[in-house]
Structure formats: structure tokens, C-alpha cells
Length: 207
Length: 256
Image 1 (cartoon, each protein chain N blue to C red):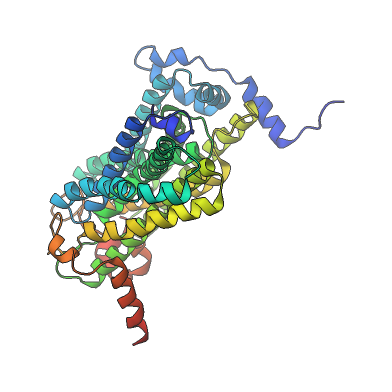
Image 2 (cartoon, chains in turn red, purple):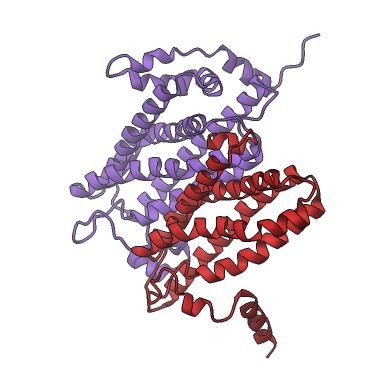
């Protein structure tokens, strides 16, 4: 199966979908890592497929139970892979644009001067937009397969619940400070979690 | 009773009559340049070949070649503001911007169109974008003598910057108009499918402009050489800086 078949909703094989998801998301990861450069390019190229496929592996059982019980487990797996692969291919398509901004936006590791801060924020905005575009494309495909808004919503909630923590665990992604050029600082990342951090941030707004 | 004639129907009738022998693209050294004739006089034939996936490898090679040569020619005119090594640099930089923008924007065009229901393959999508870039480069070439005349007879950097920007806007506008015309004609030729999604195409044009401006900004300067004759400044920044940071722009942010 080519990526063309995947995009046009034709018959799909699991191995090919995994390959496309891994390759495309690795390309997007490499583009993100280009902002810090050097090893961060390779780190993010490895981490992005781990993020997408790892989240799928961990949340699959719950998604099957709560959102796709009417399907066989093989069918659920095919739908899940297709959703992740479409998301990843969209991210891969946006990778050249992310790469251009990653290599040309101001970046001054360690100093955090105003132009670097602004460059970092623009990049984060672009990344958020890219992931949102990939997510919308993936969810649209999911909805076409499940044909139920309620089940799609449950599926997305489960995937995102795990995905947010997975992203937290795998950080740093952009590595803009210049001091965290590390692949997987688990010691830091296992202290607290995504949801605690969000809660602290929200409470901090009112204190 | 015959259907009333509209501007669209007249255009489609004209495009229907267009003929171009794409086998000519392989004949001799000048063969690849016959694609210029197709762009100018027989775009309908080129667009039908695009929709039917006929001889697209030949078209792509010819379109890339013409885009690179024509934009290099215009680039050298940019660099003639201060003749010397800058002439060569600018001649190398402009094809990088034009072809680089086309390459960076091709995956987005292909994937989003496919998701929106287009049966276009990657090769068809890439050729469509090269049609845009070659049309743009063709307009740049057409303006090259005028740009040269003003470059050698004018000393004002400000005027020339504005003049070149105006030409780029006209050239990019023509390229986008060509691709939009291709979209409309493809929809007319085969009403059962959408080859290029109209709504997305306009959003994509904005992405193209953004990428082109950012590439041009990153590869600056084009008019005046750097004091140490480097190829480009290597300084990072966003092209908005030209408008928002007048002080910094005077130092590093200017497109020229």
C-alpha cells in the first residue's frame, strides 16, 4: 500500500501503515529538532514515532473496550493504525515548513534574549497548529470509520489522556534552553506529570 | 437552444482547442524549453496531460529546468546593482528561493488535497506546483530587460527594492492565477472528481507566500554584497522583521 492509498481510504496493510506512521512522524520530529540542531534532530526523529505509536499501544485496550466494542480487535487495530498513520502523514507533509522556520527563526541557546524568546514562541505556535491539523485529519478519518460522534469523542479523549502524559515523559522536544540537549531525562520527567503541571499553572493564575 | 456564452465557457473552449506535442520535450537541447510554448499558448493541453498523468516526468524536468534558468537570469539582474561576485550569488539564490519554495510546499499540497478527496498522485501534485513556479519564473524573465534597464540607470536602493518587490508580486500572482486556472479547467474536464480543492488552494497560496518570503529573508542579501563577500548573512529571523523592526531592519532585516 502506498501513502496514496492510505490518504484515499483504500485497502490498507498494518505493516505499511506502521511504516508510514513511523517515517512521517520521524520526519516531523527531525524538523522540530532542527531548531536546537545537532543531536536533538535525531532525538526527536526517534521520539515522535515512539510518542504516536507508544500512545496507541498503551491506550488501545481501553479504546477498543469503550469506543469500538462493536468491531473485532483486528478491525479496531486497523482503524487505530489508520488514524495514527493519517495524523503522522499530515505531520510529515508539514515537516518541510516546520524545518524552514526551525532553521531560520532566532535561536540563542542559554541567553533567552527577546528575539530568541519570540522565535521560540512562533515555533511553538507552529507546532501546535501542525499537531492540531494532523489531529483533525486523523479524527476525521476515525469518525468516517466509527460513524459515531460519541464513540469518536470517547476514543479521542482516551488517546489524548495518555498522549499528553506520553509527551510529558518524552520531553524535551524543542530544547530551546541549550542546557537540556538530552534524549530522555527520565529522572526529571518522572517528577510530577502533565496533569499536575497544568493544575499548578491554572492555580498559579489565581494566586 | 445553445447555452449562453460566459467568460468561463469561452476560456474552456479555448483551452479545449489547445494542442501541444509533449514528445517535443525530449527533442534535442531546445526540446525542454518548448514547455514555455505550452505555458503561454497551449496551457489547456498541458493541463489535460497533467490531469491524465501523461508524460509528467518530461514535463517536470522541463519545468524545473526553465524555472531554474529563468529565475537565475532575473537573479543575476538583482545582483547587477553591485556587479561582481554578488551577481553570481543572486543568480544562485533566486532559483533556490523559487524551486526551494516549490519543493517545501509540495508535500502539503499533495497530502491535504488527497485528504480532501483528490485522486492526484504525488507526481501530478509536484508537476502542478512546477507549472506554478515555471509560470512565475517566466514572468520574471519577461521583466528582466526592464529590471536591468532600471538597475543600470538608477542609484536608489529604496526604489529598486520596491520595484523588484512589485515584479515579484506580479510574477507570483501570474503563477497562482495559472494554477487556479488549471484547477478550474480540470474540474470542467472531469466533473466527477475534484483534482485540486479550491478552498484549500487559496489557503495554500498563503503558505507559499509565507515560505517564499521567509526563504528570501533567510538567504538575504540580494542587491548589495556583504562586506566580507559571504553568500548570505546566516542570521536567523522572521521576514516580518522587515516591517516591525525598522532599526534592526536597517542593520540586518532588509530584504536587500
